[in-house]
Length: 388
Image 1 (cartoon, rainbow, N blue to C red):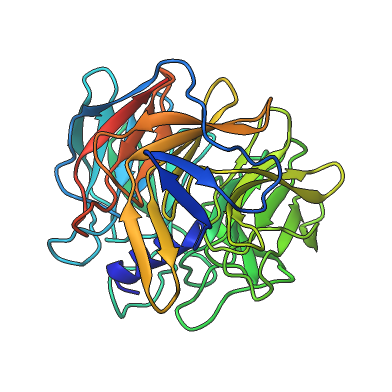
Image 2: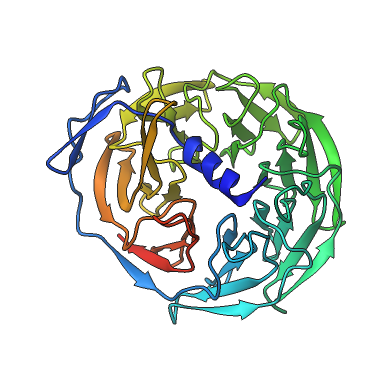
């Protein structure tokens, strides 16, 4: 799949259309989400500020917080070549700068990256460029040496899959596409053996899905390109089995999900009227419920759980109009979900509009936003910090 197709998928993935109107710079929702607000209040002072830039523009990259507080940014695709990058770099919060580190063994973008219990980072799957097949290969980054090395291969090539660290240190890889069709299989990476092994199969075919480990150790896989839109499943590591759960109200790809401190899961997507909404999953009852409306739809936005339990949603692409005559605007604005009162509040604006960026919570409590696509359709090397 081409980089342009990736961006198009990302812009459609969060929420596709929303009924809204803009008056004097304030967005009023007219959708049918529960707990609709007439306008977003503004919380305590907060700000976005530019920080150092990467050595190259990137989209489809990954950003992983390392145990020492630095952030590993790996791979992606650059607008200069349209091909995957093998390069990686480290962001140091102490200096606010990026510096090069070892290159990956294989160029790749739209791969997964998972921090393992021993501090290494597992990089798996993805593709090299347009017309190429998803890769089976995987590799490990060792922060102590600054180098990547190959590890075992997945049982099948995967793109748009999910990777979730389990409580026992293994990594669950679910779904995705092999380049010609969706994949219902799943596998586990064992870091001690350095190998992948099959584990059960999903009832639905998921790709562009999101996954999160619940407080009880199970993994929730939700929405995203399922053959039955809105499908959600639970993986039980003790039984190595998948079971369906609830009925997700969102109907979009790449709907980001976040585990809240109270054990509920927050996700985003469209309601039946096409309004941009938050949804909440209750693991105890296995049900989804509609939450409040967002100020605007945001395709390709970043979603970050902050230390105080609130959730930052930043940037993305606002879409409107009919499918025959769609219109879109790249966003710099951000909003925050407050779970205690179930509402969104305004959170200022990034230094520039961007979509498809990565967002990483730093140990300082700041959020690092990196790369993505800009207003001219080109990819970005810039980065910025959100300071609550």
